[in-house]
Amino acid sequence: MSYITTLTRMWLTRTFKPFTFTNDYDYRLNFDDCENLGLYVHIPFCKKLCAFCPYCKEVYTYEKCDDYIDYLIKEIHLVGSQMSEKKQVTSLYFGGGTPALAAYRLYEIIAAINEYFIISEGIGLELHPDNVNKETLLVLKESGISKISIGIQSFQKKFLSVLGRKEVDFVQLSEVLKRTPFETVSMDFIFALPNQTIEDLKADIEMAFSSGANHIAIYPFINFSFTDSTVQVMGKKEKRVLLDEITRYCQTKRYIRDSIWTFSNSEHAKYSSMTRDNFLGFGCSATTLLINQFKVNTFSVEDYQKRIDGKELPTSLTTRFTKRQRMMYFLFWTSYSTKVNPDDFEKFFHVPLKKMYGFEFWIAQKLGFIIKENGIYFMTLKGAFYYHYYENYYTLSYIDQMWDVMRKEAFPDKISF
Image (cartoon, rainbow, N blue to C red; front, side):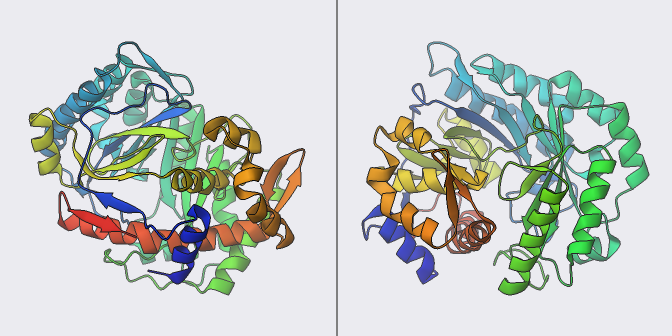
């Protein structure tokens, strides 16, 4: 594990105690009092498994996917039936995998969720470019999907070849999106690929907006240890220059930045399943973040189904937060939006941000990572890069290790970081 993440974790939590995940779990989840609660549903099937993708996924067959959806709906009822009345939530997002492969059953899944939850900010779903066709998009709209995110990765053959993906038919994509509009059409791209330049990324960004997108996400390539990817990792200095150039370019085009990696050409276009104070996850590998705990469902579809058959939650690992640990988690993911509002922190924890982390924010200002305007902390270009740099270490030190274990063991005994 990187000493940087270890030292940062010990300082911010004011303890040598590591984050420890154990195989204990709750039969009942206490989320009644959680505000700004989001929902996430994981559908782990793809027609082809991309070597660079680290997420929980299996090769799609109609039978396996259909069977899985039956259990997914049972899990929703298992959790939702714990409440005495409907709970208002911010949003619902479907990820994977390729959730559009289950388009024919989305209406059933959403109907089950609507029995227990009131969704106030819409429903989003991830799409592979192959799924962007008239028939699929109409089914999505009829099911209640209002936001879509298409995993383009790049419009350019030279980078798609590196990633093992085929070329996207730009003309067909544009025509289909024009005929079937959504509230948000987001497109995902990967930056920091070998020999990639700002001109390459500018071309992708402009092609996205001209083809019907009103939102883009530009994520850095991360080389997870357990994937089969052979893509060469870009150096730190090159990556920083590229990230700064992307940001400056989007700013000159007056695109609106709503997170480290995302920009839009409309203030109403938003797509993010991550920036929620609390969230419930359904499906194998889905995570749940509540006030006092973080839990991860098993990565094994077979064992997920066995737990549901026993009318038990399919939780694989759980960590119980100390107050400082929960604060660290809150600040880390709140910063993903490139700003931190001290009022939000105080509302959540009932203690002023300045009292708990005033020194750290003062240091961050002195180092040029953040500026303060009208009482709110905003991330600078320098701060955005170092957030990315730390997030990369966090991913490779924590998530990489956890997911590698969970891919091999359905219910590990314990993992500590």
